Image 1: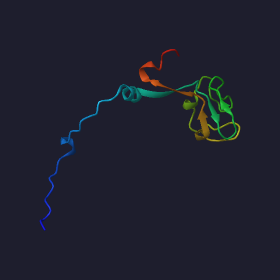
Image 2: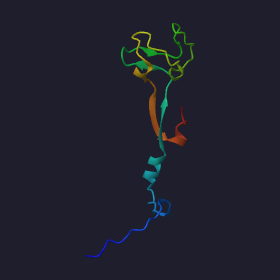
Image 3: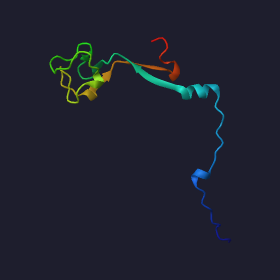
Image 4: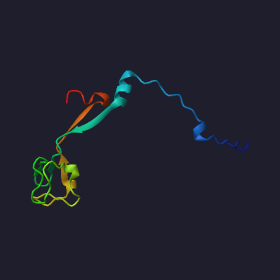
Length: 105
C-alpha cells in the first residue's frame, strides 16, 4: 500500500472563485432593502397602551415630540410598568429598492 501523499497548503486569499453572473431578478433582490416608516409611536404588548410622541409623557416627564426610540432607558409603561422591550414599534415596514424608497412619501 502506498503512503498517503501530502497535500500542499494554499492560502484562502489565493483561491479565486468564478462569480456567477446575476440575473436581473437576483440583482434587484440584492438591492431590496426594508425600512420602517412611522411617527415614533409604539404599543405596549402587555396592556395595549400606545406611546404617542406628539403627546410625550407629562408624568415622567417626556417632552412632546420625543420619539419612542429616544426615550430615557428607565422610562416604563405608565399603565402596567412594562419595560421598553415589551413595546412594539407601530411603524410599517416598507420593502423596495433602496434608491426608490423615498419616492412618493
